[in-house]
Image (cartoon, rainbow, N blue to C red; front, side, top):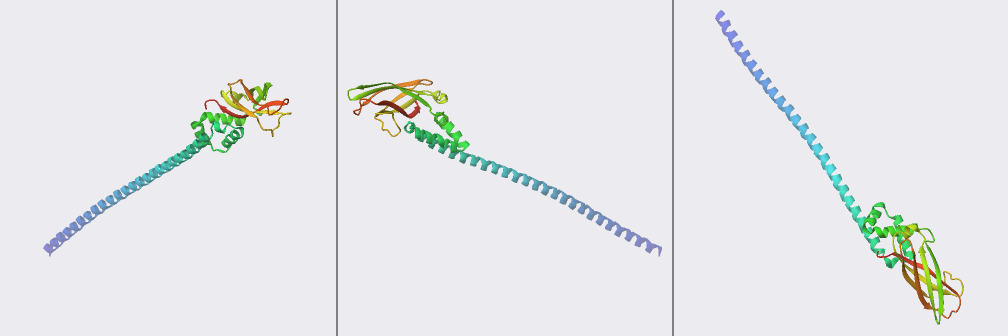
Length: 233
């Protein structure tokens, strides 16, 4: 009986040792798996953060590109509008009403288009704004001589630009209509001729022009400025 107890105890010990080893292996495996799982979740979280940052960067780049494209489109439209205004504003449009129309158009243009005009044709813009803002009347003129000779009348006159800003822009080409009337000239009178001359910067210009008398032997000689344009522009 004592020998049987010893063998039974030995067997029980072996079984317990085996079970303990198995449990240790299971615990080790569980620990490894848990560690791997934790590492995997950490890697996934880092990847998610990286992806989110990448998406934010891509969105920022896209927004920047969109803003850049929008700016380019706006600039292209402004440049096109500026070219149209600049090309359409020439000495051929130097009659006062045309000057007023072109200058007034600047009042309704957006800032980016005005900037484009200032870059494309700065002198034209400066002239248009000076004419638009000039005090009225902007001119002071007088006839200095009017002589009848046969069927013609020779008139001499002088004209000064009274607005300082306009006058200081430089020499100005001017056209005047000439009138011969029995009495004082009115807006309904028809001119009998015209004269073109240049007014120097800050000074006054003079002209002499011979026109048909139209049978008049007495009456009034007068002239009226109709066109203005910077010389050489």
